[in-house]
Image (cartoon, rainbow, N blue to C red):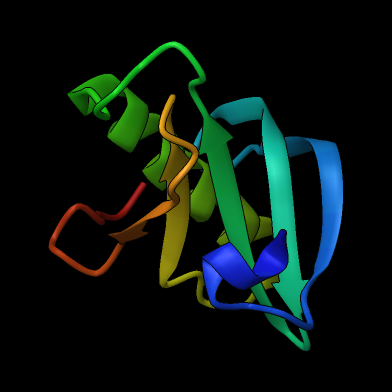
Length: 99
């Protein structure tokens, strides 16, 4: 399963709760992949064929919350829809701002 993310040695955790008071964020990640000190949030939308803007913003918010919680940079995450093929979402495209 993890080969499809390009992370064959990654650990996985399901339904991970997040809290990032600095950003005013709380949430629950469907799947969190980790390999060493790096983490990738995964958002599953099994009834959608393409990500919507809100899905991508939610994934980016998970990345910001994880950065606050871990103190490490989270550069990308994955969106998985009905086709079950993960789409990697880059978080460095200017979507970040200061809280």
